[in-house]
Amino acid sequence: MSSSFYVGQREFFPGVGRIPFEGRDSDNPLAYKVYDADKQIGGRSMAEHLRFAVAYWHSFCGAGHDPFGPGTRVYPWDQGATPLARAEAKADAAFEFVTKLGVPYYCFHDVDLAPDADDIGEYRANLGHMVEIAGERQRQTGVKLLWGTANLFSHPRYMNGAATNPDFAVVARAAVQVRAALDATVALGGSNYVFWGGREGYACLLNTDMKREQAHLARFLAAARDYGRSIGFTGTFLIEPKPMEPMHHQYDFDSATVVGFLRAHGLDRDFKLNIEANHATLSGHTFAHDLQVASDAGLLGSIDANRGNPQNGWDTDQFPTDLYDAVGAMLVVLRQGGFGDGGLNFDAKVRRESSDPQDLFIAHIGGMDTFARGLEVAHALVTASPLEQWRSERYASFDSGAGAAFANGQLTLQDLCAHAQQAGEPRQRSGRQEAYENLLNQYLLR
Ligand code: XLS
Ligand code: NI
Ligand code: NI
Image (cartoon, rainbow, N blue to C red; front, side):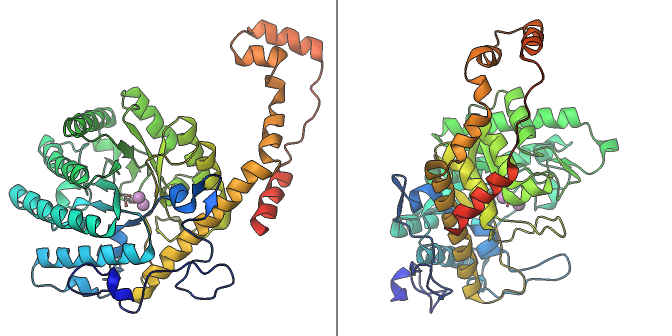
């Protein structure tokens, strides 16, 4: 039965069919326990809420290499005679995988999809060819593009940065890739276009003019925006914050930094944020914190779902399994009314030691079930538990009278002092953190 899911000449994941929903009592590793695509939660299906995407780079390109050794997985799609033949087989494997998983979206970098080349004509021709194939596979399978991006961090020419490179020649060369990746995203109907500035930062402040580099980044982003709009891209541009790694310091440090940067440069009408869990934790925040900061600014666009390793603090890009974190994330998403055109992209990789093809399915199943449960619990918390009422009661003193006048900007500092004089010492009010934490766990266990 699985044969109907492969799209090219051959099947790359034989023995795995469409992943079914079997419910919580199932012990089948290749079945969803919670994620039931059509299940209605508050007037939308789980699929519509969660808008899952598979990341091309981790799932079909990276084979498990780390700084100490090469990849451990031998991909059957990576054995063709030419780079283009391998890219074509990889696309077939990707669409087979995404279709069997039953996920609606995928995401790619230009050079995940097509072979890179120093020669600009060859690079563009490779990408153009693969965009045609991907477009055909999208039509065949119904899978859609959540976002495209350009890899401006792997090639050695970008070692000192792409848009922030001190050498204008490199900045201009980066534009070649962004233009081509935007063309590809538009051709494939992508909903968003992402900028993750892996090398946009510095290794040493002594040799760096930070102010100038950041001004160049803003100019580059504005030029990309103008080009994108000129070719009919109506979607959202997304900046993906990360504080460090590979650079010592990355300019898109965290949500708060990026919100300020976008506003300072007048980019906040076209750009939003793509928040990655492991990047938030690298910057010393929780995942939920960076989501909340972006959402409060009206700029939360999309999520890169993964998790780090609390013991080592690197960007380990593990698949998300933490239900508590997923509830925290989905609370932010639900309170802002959903993702809009964004989604939940698994920017995550199976471990180097996970060498069975089935591990890739199992990893995604676990991540999807985690967020599906996060959605259920967060929805119950905001609609059926006392959570929202407790929170609003905590701020009730600003709802009327002098508190409301203050919040509306009508009281001077002297007015506040007069109020304090009259009201006397404020009554102590418990923050009740433990009650909130217990409430979350209570709903998680239901
Ligand atoms: C790396 C980033 C990268 C972006 C896309 O840390 O997460 O994968 O999502 O360039
Ligand atoms: Ni990411
Ligand atoms: Ni990352």
